Image 1 (cartoon, rainbow over the protein chains, first blue to last red):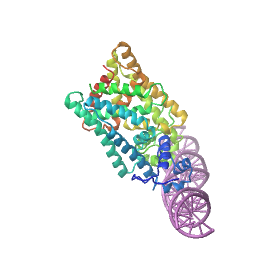
Image 2: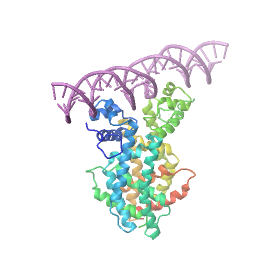
Image 3: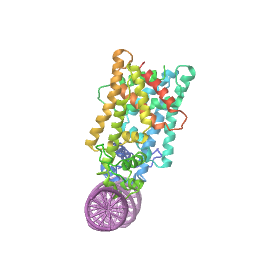
Image 4: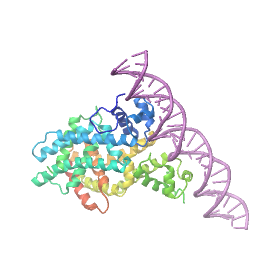
Length: 195
Length: 195
DNA sequence: TCAATATCTGAACATACGTTCAGTTCAAGG
DNA sequence: CCTTGAACTGAACGTATGTTCAGATATTGA
């Protein structure tokens, strides 16, 4: 196996992280043992510690990388000018990005309480940063009269909850295409803010 | 301590179940030990087995009771005649019921994967039954032209995800009153289905 | 008051956990 | 070919787990 492939600050090897991701998503952080992870990669448990300092770092690194990717990806998206269009862009981006990462999203939502307090603080900050992206779109639309949003924070969280909810039921090859799901959700989101 | 207080079919003692509920919600099923639960009730671990056959049953019983209560409570609600009013009733009911049971809801959403397959099947059925309640309201409204809902199943899940999302941020004594939260959410739900 | 029954303890069982580490294997460079 | 260093094993460490159970304690009814 090859180790630390460079530029990140993560202390975790990518192959190990990938295996742990699948297993954590399936069984939960607390329920998955280092021996299970090792056997998934074809190693003995001891060898894992060449790739991660401990189990907790494994969890933190995958959440951290996920959220960094999320923010970077959103940053790279070309933004339209009007709030309504921006909200549509955000909606489609959110659904698409999250559906491509079922395991990582599941873990990021479910395993927060298994982070050490310091690690939790880091992750929470990144989550907040993403929420703020949506919130500022809603704020702009509210100020310009395009949206009717009685409470910004609440609307932000409500929309994100609704959108992330797709992950609990959508499966590739199911009844609805991803495009169609995106369109329907966009309509619901748009109407929910009165646009 | 008093044991089995009667009419339910649960095999779990209520005091033990209540303590386990708090602890499971806080730390997760897999991360909480029988000894922790026992110490919370002021017993030794062995004594717990007078109140539950095993840890798994503890988890199942609390989920099962929660969902039974949910369905019973919704059953007892007086329903208005029009779909729009019904949707409003459902929205308020859902928020109110769920906010009064933060721990139970958290567990019901997070610990599904820790149920044995047979137990999971039972719980899943009850969840589905509740979703169907909302879905039939949407169906009626769609048929009568009060709602515009391109996909019934999707809209049902989207609305429930949005509503249950309240539990992740609302806390008693926070910035918004529960009444205000209910009103804002109702407006978003109403608009999201085009009513 | 005494026996019967319900409740609970404390220790033990087998098994699993995260982590460490001395020592083996293996690939590459000189 | 031999040396060096990284990659990995396998066993061990201390601790924790869910569950069982013989025996002690408390409560109750006659």
